[in-house]
Figure 1 (spheres, rainbow, N blue to C red):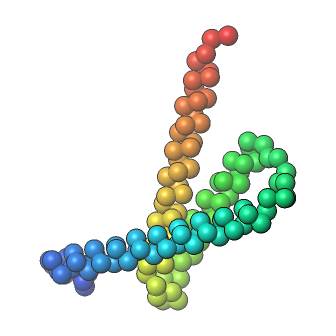
Figure 2 (figure 1 turned 60 degrees about the vertical axis):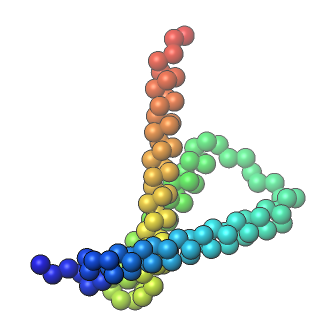
Length: 125
């Protein structure tokens, strides 16, 4: 039985996987720090500008469009990696992970909204 090189090679393969996992976690933490500092800089500069009020449907649509964009980006990076155009596997894995987290969060919001709707429908008037 032939395994994928580097995986399934006993303790050495596990150590390589754990090292790659640690690198991905470190890069993810760095990206979070960068995003948080950019977000605070943008928020500090935009204190005088009032955003137009959005309704619930618009907010939900914008959130779903954002999740769709993240998933499209991850799909594009995956295809580019498969074609050999992108060689940074950590970038591809991070994009896939981000898409998965965004989808899971969307699913949880959907479940909460459905539960709230069902609770309202059960109420007596």
